[in-house]
Image 1 (cartoon, rainbow, N blue to C red):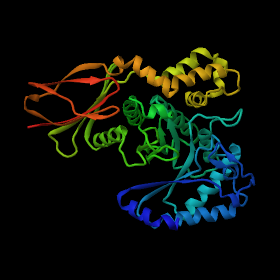
Image 2 (spheres, one colour; image 1 turned 180 degrees about the vertical axis):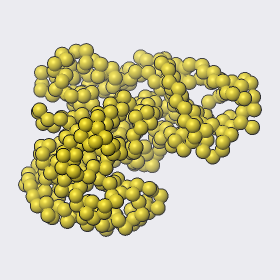
Image 3 (cartoon, rainbow, N blue to C red; image 1 turned 45 degrees about the vertical axis):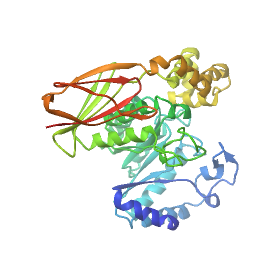
Image 4 (cartoon, rainbow, N blue to C red; image 1 turned 135 degrees about the vertical axis):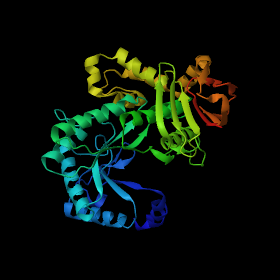
Length: 425
């Protein structure tokens, strides 16, 4: 960590909170000596519990003392995605890890916040007959009177309804086990799973849908998967970040920026119907100005692939996948979980295949680029002035907006996110 001191010192003055993921076990401290690389990403030894918790706790203690030097609110989440291959043991071993780590953190800094279980999907069950890991953690912490300041999970989905579904399940568990004491809800990674969707014309509208989903679910903290692309993505927009490794800002970067502007305004109003979503807020910089953002989204290839599986695989077999996110992962792999439905998953994979999506776009180009003419009435709009507008899809554009007395008229493309800033004289 000393090697990162300079970077952290630069970040601290401009950030109110730091979220630190405490993972993984160093090879020399692991209870496993298996150095096989798992999923091409991590050594099996690094996914196991420490062989000596005294040494582990000393490491955690020193980590907390290090971050105490910076004037930020600290959040420590125990591990990363222990519901999948990043954790090589069972639920009870994870709960022991959480207990040891959480108590050590609080002994070093009582004001620090600690939580978990940092799952890749909120409802994943990693052991037959047991509940999802986050629910198990809520129950275990209540039973053993352990600190649990926040519940964290990841959201890699095009379905914003999953956010509220997760939070509602956690709230019920806390009400049942913790005398109604509700912690914070933190989504520490989110994006969409498939690279071809991340660089598609749907990406901007999907981002807007998810950001609204966090607002509707009243999630306390959400952090995008990464600021800059990582892993093997180098020269296109398919990576997980808002910015490429070459420094290019993706369209989603500007969607995120617009929602940041909205969040700082006053009197946020959300208007939703079958064809359009619109958010309006009073500008934080000038009470006579307003920020509007709107979008219309049509079904995309990921949804079509999932619907193909749901329609062609028997319901009793779908239970093996637990949720749509796991179905999505096997679609990406092009195989079923037990080999029985490989043919169906190969077809679903083709639906996601970039070549197929290119064909899909050509076939549906008219629908993808179709426009709706919108007219918005602005009270006392005779004296309004359009200060700025930005249309975001797979590129950035300015629109022609017609002002007619107290009404503004413009065209909105499908899957386009459109931002307007207007002021009243």
